Image (cartoon, rainbow, N blue to C red):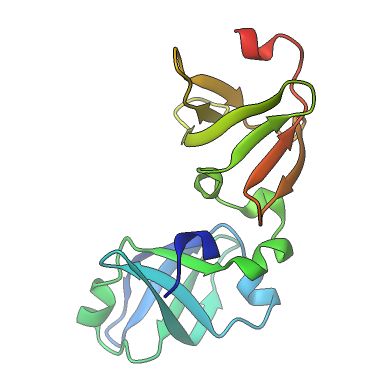
Length: 172
């Protein structure tokens, strides 16, 4: 059985393309175009399932067309619309950090170089111009800007983000 912690999201199925089961999809990382990846993992009915790739082609740097083995009609392709595409976590190191969807970091522990453990990221607030890590706290949620300037390192296996936050940020 494939677990959520064993995968990371890279894209989403948008719509069927044509009548032979091809699907339009968007992606945040084209690691599958640089590495030998035989299948995408897609969550269907709450279960992560590998689907083997018949063909794919990139249309832009964030969109392409995908054909999965045994998905050969428009009706079968419609069942995939809106579903997230995942890759096994072993490929995360091959992905440029800028190309990982921010929702991937929900559940990571945020540790500051000075203050130590800050807390677990419960969600990513992308409603503002700058995305924010939301850390649930007893009194108020902490909002930490998602900024490469603050991130010292990421341990994908342990699900930890090491940061060096400016003095006073946590007191705001």
